[in-house]
Image (cartoon, rainbow, N blue to C red; front, top):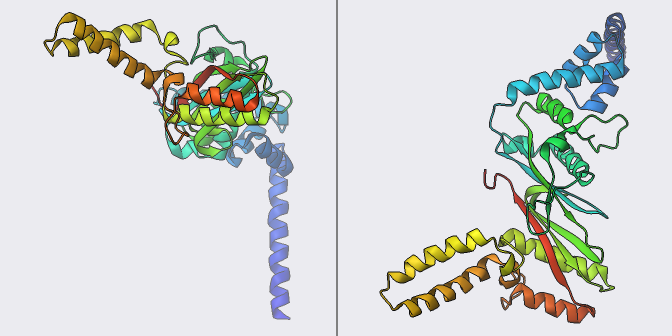
Length: 335
Protein backbone atom coordinates (compact mmCIF):
# COMPACT_ATOMS: atom_id res chain seq x y z
CA UNK A 1 0.00 0.00 0.00
CA UNK A 2 2.86 2.37 0.89
CA UNK A 3 4.59 1.54 -2.41
CA UNK A 4 1.45 2.35 -4.39
CA UNK A 5 1.14 5.64 -2.50
CA UNK A 6 4.73 6.59 -3.43
CA UNK A 7 4.11 5.70 -7.07
CA UNK A 8 0.96 7.84 -7.17
CA UNK A 9 2.84 10.75 -5.61
CA UNK A 10 5.68 10.41 -8.14
CA UNK A 11 3.20 10.31 -11.04
CA UNK A 12 1.36 13.37 -9.67
CA UNK A 13 4.65 15.25 -9.29
CA UNK A 14 5.67 14.38 -12.89
CA UNK A 15 2.27 15.54 -14.12
CA UNK A 16 2.63 18.84 -12.25
CA UNK A 17 6.16 19.38 -13.61
CA UNK A 18 4.99 18.67 -17.18
CA UNK A 19 2.00 20.98 -16.72
CA UNK A 20 4.25 23.72 -15.37
CA UNK A 21 6.55 23.27 -18.35
CA UNK A 22 3.64 23.54 -20.76
CA UNK A 23 2.41 26.64 -18.94
CA UNK A 24 5.83 28.28 -19.22
CA UNK A 25 5.90 27.47 -22.93
CA UNK A 26 2.42 28.89 -23.44
CA UNK A 27 3.36 32.02 -21.52
CA UNK A 28 6.38 32.44 -23.78
CA UNK A 29 4.19 32.09 -26.87
CA UNK A 30 4.94 28.54 -28.01
CA UNK A 31 4.04 24.94 -27.18
CA UNK A 32 6.06 21.83 -26.43
CA UNK A 33 4.61 20.24 -29.55
CA UNK A 34 6.08 23.10 -31.60
CA UNK A 35 9.50 22.50 -30.03
CA UNK A 36 9.23 18.80 -30.88
CA UNK A 37 8.12 19.50 -34.46
CA UNK A 38 10.89 22.05 -34.96
CA UNK A 39 13.46 19.58 -33.68
CA UNK A 40 12.18 17.00 -36.17
CA UNK A 41 12.27 19.45 -39.09
CA UNK A 42 15.67 21.03 -38.37
CA UNK A 43 17.58 18.62 -36.07
CA UNK A 44 18.69 21.76 -34.20
CA UNK A 45 19.42 21.57 -30.45
CA UNK A 46 16.36 22.01 -28.22
CA UNK A 47 17.83 25.16 -26.65
CA UNK A 48 18.16 26.78 -30.10
CA UNK A 49 14.59 25.74 -31.05
CA UNK A 50 13.20 27.31 -27.87
CA UNK A 51 15.20 30.49 -28.47
CA UNK A 52 13.90 30.74 -32.06
CA UNK A 53 10.27 30.14 -31.03
CA UNK A 54 10.51 32.76 -28.30
CA UNK A 55 11.97 35.27 -30.77
CA UNK A 56 9.11 34.72 -33.23
CA UNK A 57 6.22 34.41 -30.75
CA UNK A 58 5.63 30.77 -31.62
CA UNK A 59 5.38 31.15 -35.42
CA UNK A 60 6.92 27.84 -36.53
CA UNK A 61 7.85 28.86 -40.09
CA UNK A 62 9.30 32.18 -38.90
CA UNK A 63 11.19 30.34 -36.16
CA UNK A 64 12.80 28.04 -38.70
CA UNK A 65 13.74 31.06 -40.83
CA UNK A 66 15.15 32.74 -37.70
CA UNK A 67 17.18 29.64 -36.93
CA UNK A 68 18.60 29.58 -40.45
CA UNK A 69 19.62 33.22 -40.21
CA UNK A 70 21.22 32.56 -36.85
CA UNK A 71 22.95 29.58 -38.44
CA UNK A 72 24.39 31.80 -41.15
CA UNK A 73 25.70 34.21 -38.51
CA UNK A 74 27.27 31.33 -36.62
CA UNK A 75 28.68 29.91 -39.85
CA UNK A 76 30.57 33.12 -40.60
CA UNK A 77 32.46 32.68 -37.33
CA UNK A 78 33.52 29.16 -38.36
CA UNK A 79 34.24 29.88 -42.04
CA UNK A 80 37.92 30.68 -41.46
CA UNK A 81 38.57 27.32 -39.82
CA UNK A 82 40.19 24.74 -42.09
CA UNK A 83 37.92 21.94 -43.29
CA UNK A 84 40.08 19.20 -44.77
CA UNK A 85 38.22 16.06 -43.70
CA UNK A 86 34.69 15.07 -44.65
CA UNK A 87 33.23 12.74 -47.25
CA UNK A 88 32.66 12.13 -50.94
CA UNK A 89 29.04 11.46 -51.83
CA UNK A 90 27.35 10.10 -54.94
CA UNK A 91 23.80 10.50 -56.21
CA UNK A 92 22.42 8.92 -59.37
CA UNK A 93 19.36 9.12 -61.60
CA UNK A 94 18.55 8.56 -65.27
CA UNK A 95 20.61 11.65 -66.18
CA UNK A 96 23.86 10.35 -64.70
CA UNK A 97 25.89 10.37 -61.49
CA UNK A 98 26.73 13.41 -59.36
CA UNK A 99 29.92 13.32 -57.31
CA UNK A 100 30.42 15.91 -54.56
CA UNK A 101 33.13 16.41 -51.94
CA UNK A 102 31.80 17.99 -48.73
CA UNK A 103 34.49 18.91 -46.22
CA UNK A 104 34.39 19.06 -42.43
CA UNK A 105 37.09 19.74 -39.87
CA UNK A 106 37.16 16.19 -38.45
CA UNK A 107 36.04 12.71 -39.38
CA UNK A 108 33.98 12.71 -36.16
CA UNK A 109 31.45 15.00 -37.85
CA UNK A 110 31.82 13.13 -41.16
CA UNK A 111 30.58 10.00 -39.38
CA UNK A 112 27.51 11.82 -38.05
CA UNK A 113 24.23 10.84 -39.72
CA UNK A 114 23.04 14.47 -39.79
CA UNK A 115 26.08 15.38 -41.89
CA UNK A 116 25.72 12.31 -44.10
CA UNK A 117 22.04 12.99 -44.81
CA UNK A 118 22.89 16.61 -45.65
CA UNK A 119 25.75 15.58 -47.96
CA UNK A 120 23.47 13.12 -49.78
CA UNK A 121 20.89 15.88 -50.29
CA UNK A 122 23.59 18.20 -51.65
CA UNK A 123 24.59 15.52 -54.18
CA UNK A 124 20.96 15.15 -55.27
CA UNK A 125 20.81 18.91 -55.74
CA UNK A 126 23.96 18.69 -57.85
CA UNK A 127 22.22 16.36 -60.31
CA UNK A 128 19.84 19.15 -61.28
CA UNK A 129 22.58 21.76 -61.79
CA UNK A 130 23.83 22.93 -65.20
CA UNK A 131 27.33 21.60 -65.81
CA UNK A 132 30.26 23.40 -67.42
CA UNK A 133 32.24 21.99 -70.31
CA UNK A 134 35.37 21.77 -68.18
CA UNK A 135 35.84 18.24 -66.95
CA UNK A 136 36.60 17.08 -63.41
CA UNK A 137 37.54 13.75 -64.93
CA UNK A 138 37.38 12.08 -68.33
CA UNK A 139 33.87 12.76 -69.64
CA UNK A 140 32.73 14.39 -66.38
CA UNK A 141 31.53 17.99 -66.18
CA UNK A 142 32.25 20.40 -63.32
CA UNK A 143 29.38 22.02 -61.45
CA UNK A 144 29.90 25.57 -60.15
CA UNK A 145 30.05 25.34 -56.35
CA UNK A 146 28.66 28.87 -55.85
CA UNK A 147 25.66 28.08 -58.04
CA UNK A 148 25.17 24.81 -56.19
CA UNK A 149 25.12 26.76 -52.92
CA UNK A 150 22.27 28.91 -54.22
CA UNK A 151 20.22 25.93 -55.44
CA UNK A 152 17.38 24.47 -53.32
CA UNK A 153 18.45 21.56 -51.15
CA UNK A 154 17.00 18.32 -52.52
CA UNK A 155 15.69 17.25 -49.12
CA UNK A 156 12.20 16.29 -50.26
CA UNK A 157 10.64 19.01 -48.09
CA UNK A 158 8.44 21.89 -49.21
CA UNK A 159 10.14 25.29 -49.11
CA UNK A 160 13.55 23.64 -48.74
CA UNK A 161 16.39 26.03 -47.90
CA UNK A 162 19.24 26.82 -50.29
CA UNK A 163 22.19 24.44 -50.04
CA UNK A 164 24.36 27.20 -48.52
CA UNK A 165 21.73 27.92 -45.83
CA UNK A 166 21.41 24.22 -45.02
CA UNK A 167 25.19 24.00 -44.63
CA UNK A 168 25.16 27.04 -42.34
CA UNK A 169 22.48 25.47 -40.14
CA UNK A 170 24.48 22.23 -40.00
CA UNK A 171 27.51 24.21 -38.80
CA UNK A 172 25.43 25.46 -35.87
CA UNK A 173 24.23 21.95 -35.06
CA UNK A 174 27.56 20.15 -35.47
CA UNK A 175 29.98 22.88 -34.38
CA UNK A 176 32.37 22.66 -37.33
CA UNK A 177 33.03 24.46 -40.60
CA UNK A 178 31.34 22.59 -43.47
CA UNK A 179 32.01 23.43 -47.11
CA UNK A 180 31.33 21.99 -50.55
CA UNK A 181 34.80 21.79 -52.08
CA UNK A 182 34.02 20.48 -55.57
CA UNK A 183 31.23 18.87 -57.54
CA UNK A 184 30.70 17.31 -60.94
CA UNK A 185 28.27 15.22 -62.96
CA UNK A 186 29.10 12.24 -65.16
CA UNK A 187 26.28 12.20 -67.75
CA UNK A 188 24.60 8.92 -68.64
CA UNK A 189 25.21 7.82 -72.25
CA UNK A 190 22.28 7.62 -74.63
CA UNK A 191 22.91 3.89 -74.97
CA UNK A 192 24.62 2.25 -72.03
CA UNK A 193 24.98 2.73 -68.27
CA UNK A 194 26.75 4.70 -65.58
CA UNK A 195 27.95 2.70 -62.58
CA UNK A 196 29.72 3.66 -59.37
CA UNK A 197 31.57 2.42 -56.31
CA UNK A 198 32.20 3.98 -52.88
CA UNK A 199 35.21 2.89 -50.83
CA UNK A 200 35.34 3.12 -47.01
CA UNK A 201 31.62 3.95 -47.00
CA UNK A 202 30.05 5.63 -43.98
CA UNK A 203 26.58 4.96 -45.40
CA UNK A 204 25.02 4.27 -48.80
CA UNK A 205 26.69 6.53 -51.36
CA UNK A 206 28.82 8.34 -48.75
CA UNK A 207 32.47 7.49 -48.09
CA UNK A 208 36.13 8.48 -48.27
CA UNK A 209 36.74 7.71 -51.96
CA UNK A 210 34.32 7.21 -54.82
CA UNK A 211 34.38 6.65 -58.56
CA UNK A 212 31.85 6.43 -61.37
CA UNK A 213 32.25 5.19 -64.92
CA UNK A 214 30.28 5.53 -68.16
CA UNK A 215 29.94 2.51 -70.46
CA UNK A 216 28.44 2.72 -73.94
CA UNK A 217 26.97 -0.49 -75.36
CA UNK A 218 23.90 -1.80 -77.14
CA UNK A 219 24.04 -4.96 -75.01
CA UNK A 220 20.59 -6.01 -73.82
CA UNK A 221 21.81 -7.32 -70.45
CA UNK A 222 21.97 -4.03 -68.56
CA UNK A 223 22.57 -5.75 -65.21
CA UNK A 224 25.71 -7.45 -66.51
CA UNK A 225 26.87 -4.19 -68.07
CA UNK A 226 26.30 -2.33 -64.80
CA UNK A 227 28.16 -5.04 -62.86
CA UNK A 228 31.14 -4.58 -65.18
CA UNK A 229 30.90 -0.83 -64.62
CA UNK A 230 30.96 -1.28 -60.85
CA UNK A 231 34.10 -3.42 -61.18
CA UNK A 232 35.70 -0.71 -63.32
CA UNK A 233 34.74 1.95 -60.76
CA UNK A 234 36.35 -0.21 -58.06
CA UNK A 235 39.46 -0.45 -60.24
CA UNK A 236 39.55 3.35 -60.68
CA UNK A 237 39.42 3.82 -56.91
CA UNK A 238 42.33 1.40 -56.46
CA UNK A 239 44.46 2.53 -59.44
CA UNK A 240 43.67 6.18 -60.24
CA UNK A 241 44.08 6.84 -64.00
CA UNK A 242 44.56 10.24 -65.60
CA UNK A 243 42.51 9.50 -68.71
CA UNK A 244 40.59 6.77 -70.51
CA UNK A 245 43.24 6.32 -73.23
CA UNK A 246 46.79 7.52 -73.86
CA UNK A 247 45.46 9.93 -76.50
CA UNK A 248 43.51 11.73 -73.78
CA UNK A 249 46.40 12.16 -71.33
CA UNK A 250 47.05 15.94 -71.07
CA UNK A 251 49.85 17.05 -73.40
CA UNK A 252 51.61 18.98 -70.62
CA UNK A 253 51.77 15.84 -68.46
CA UNK A 254 53.31 13.86 -71.34
CA UNK A 255 55.81 16.66 -72.07
CA UNK A 256 56.88 16.82 -68.43
CA UNK A 257 57.24 13.04 -68.21
CA UNK A 258 59.23 12.95 -71.46
CA UNK A 259 61.57 15.66 -70.13
CA UNK A 260 62.22 13.68 -66.95
CA UNK A 261 62.75 10.40 -68.82
CA UNK A 262 65.08 12.07 -71.33
CA UNK A 263 67.26 13.49 -68.55
CA UNK A 264 67.45 10.06 -66.92
CA UNK A 265 68.29 8.30 -70.19
CA UNK A 266 71.00 10.81 -71.16
CA UNK A 267 72.85 10.00 -67.94
CA UNK A 268 73.53 6.55 -69.39
CA UNK A 269 75.94 8.13 -71.91
CA UNK A 270 74.49 6.09 -74.77
CA UNK A 271 74.04 7.40 -78.34
CA UNK A 272 71.11 9.74 -79.10
CA UNK A 273 69.16 7.15 -81.09
CA UNK A 274 69.43 4.64 -78.23
CA UNK A 275 68.43 7.31 -75.72
CA UNK A 276 65.31 8.07 -77.79
CA UNK A 277 64.32 4.39 -77.83
CA UNK A 278 64.82 4.24 -74.07
CA UNK A 279 62.56 7.26 -73.62
CA UNK A 280 59.83 5.79 -75.85
CA UNK A 281 59.96 2.48 -74.00
CA UNK A 282 59.63 4.19 -70.64
CA UNK A 283 56.83 6.39 -71.95
CA UNK A 284 54.90 3.26 -72.93
CA UNK A 285 55.33 2.03 -69.37
CA UNK A 286 54.06 5.40 -68.11
CA UNK A 287 50.92 5.11 -70.27
CA UNK A 288 50.24 1.66 -68.79
CA UNK A 289 50.17 3.35 -65.39
CA UNK A 290 47.97 6.38 -66.21
CA UNK A 291 45.70 5.39 -69.14
CA UNK A 292 42.70 3.38 -67.93
CA UNK A 293 42.47 1.12 -70.98
CA UNK A 294 46.13 0.11 -70.62
CA UNK A 295 46.15 -0.46 -66.87
CA UNK A 296 46.16 -4.01 -65.52
CA UNK A 297 42.56 -4.71 -64.48
CA UNK A 298 42.66 -5.22 -60.68
CA UNK A 299 39.86 -7.82 -60.70
CA UNK A 300 41.56 -9.93 -63.40
CA UNK A 301 43.71 -12.68 -61.87
CA UNK A 302 46.02 -12.70 -64.88
CA UNK A 303 46.44 -8.93 -64.86
CA UNK A 304 45.07 -8.40 -68.38
CA UNK A 305 44.61 -4.74 -69.38
CA UNK A 306 41.21 -3.08 -68.99
CA UNK A 307 40.94 -2.87 -72.79
CA UNK A 308 41.02 -6.68 -73.03
CA UNK A 309 38.40 -6.99 -70.30
CA UNK A 310 36.07 -4.69 -72.27
CA UNK A 311 36.65 -6.69 -75.46
CA UNK A 312 35.89 -9.93 -73.64
CA UNK A 313 32.74 -8.41 -72.15
CA UNK A 314 31.63 -7.28 -75.60
CA UNK A 315 31.89 -10.84 -76.92
CA UNK A 316 30.10 -12.23 -73.89
CA UNK A 317 27.25 -9.69 -74.06
CA UNK A 318 26.89 -9.76 -77.82
CA UNK A 319 27.71 -6.06 -78.42
CA UNK A 320 30.89 -3.92 -78.15
CA UNK A 321 31.49 -2.20 -74.81
CA UNK A 322 33.28 1.16 -74.72
CA UNK A 323 34.33 3.21 -71.70
CA UNK A 324 33.66 6.86 -72.51
CA UNK A 325 34.35 8.55 -69.20
CA UNK A 326 34.94 8.36 -65.48
CA UNK A 327 35.30 10.47 -62.37
CA UNK A 328 37.17 9.79 -59.13
CA UNK A 329 37.08 11.87 -55.92
CA UNK A 330 38.97 11.24 -52.69
CA UNK A 331 38.61 13.33 -49.54
CA UNK A 332 41.32 15.98 -49.33
CA UNK A 333 42.84 14.99 -52.64
CA UNK A 334 44.96 17.80 -54.13
CA UNK A 335 44.12 20.17 -51.28
